[in-house]
Image (tube, helix red, strand yellow):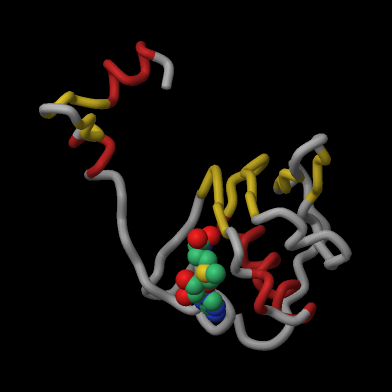
Length: 124
Ligand SMILES: C[S@@+](CC[C@H](N)C(=O)[O-])C[C@H]1O[C@@H](n2cnc3c(N)ncnc32)[C@H](O)[C@@H]1O
């Protein structure tokens, strides 16, 4: 890590670096089912996210379920917010408004500035 960032956001405790309290107190942990739960307006109250990291989860879902979860992610992302998945999890899937940017080693997905209407399948 960049030394300036390390100094700004971490405190050294013995041989370990601990993330500063000001950052840690912004973290909220929630448990939920991304297929069954509404992410934006339920008890989960997730929204305005700059980044969703969802690795090795879509692998277990069928195409319809992936489409529904992508729509939910689009709802909770900020404009230009990113989704990161594991390698090869979303190619060949219907991405809705989520836009893929392809790099030599990976793919990054992003919520665009403007979106078409989000259609929900089933209960969100
Ligand atoms: C193979 S693990 C990947 C864990 C971690 N993301 C990683 O890459 O190491 C799959 C994870 O997906 C979670 N998962 C599967 N279906 C889910 C669902 N419908 N809602 C929320 N989490 C789910 C499981 O609980 C499990 O933690």
